[in-house]
Length: 290
Image: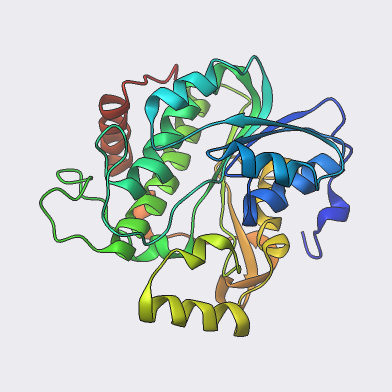
């Protein structure tokens, strides 16, 4: 897929996309590219005012709807507004934030990045016609799934450890969902992507010395949000493999054109994936129809 860019996006007229976290960074870049190619983009945003401001800068068909992934009532309310979509892009996320909890009592990063998207995907699966795309991260390599303490109630909280766990969980979810889709002979795809090192607003949420290091990296190494969104766009509309994982193909996966990416051995642990799936269904109260 060498040289794949937004110019390779096909005509998306009559196709509908849901993009979570579309108010800035990767989400805004993804929504803009899909809308400019003719797609109808539902921008699922926690901050509707900010979402409307971004929508005014996009040429194409966009709708802004309220979605707070840190509140399962909001997830269910948003799902009730969707009759059909071709692709669900689970992009929204929080990164390396101080310890806090969601409205449902989950640790904020696992609750927002994984459990909120897991619930949304389950509620919408029968209304999504082609693909579910989960946005992970290279930090999943340092992630560890603790099934006995997913919400950091007993461990000493580590901001990056919690972020890495949530991104590893998204990959385990992607691969397990694809296995289940295969089992029921569904033509739908579960695909994942990561942006490499992209300079986005999510990177500004850390604090103190860490924030300064990230800011330096943003200026010296990181690629733009538009470049970081390319793997997600390929996963959503390109010739993606079932259960494929896509990211930048240069600089050890930090930047460059999108290509197939490797993932950790932990992300392919089928036993952990099944157990995490069952735990997520219990925690969210959402049962998948596969």
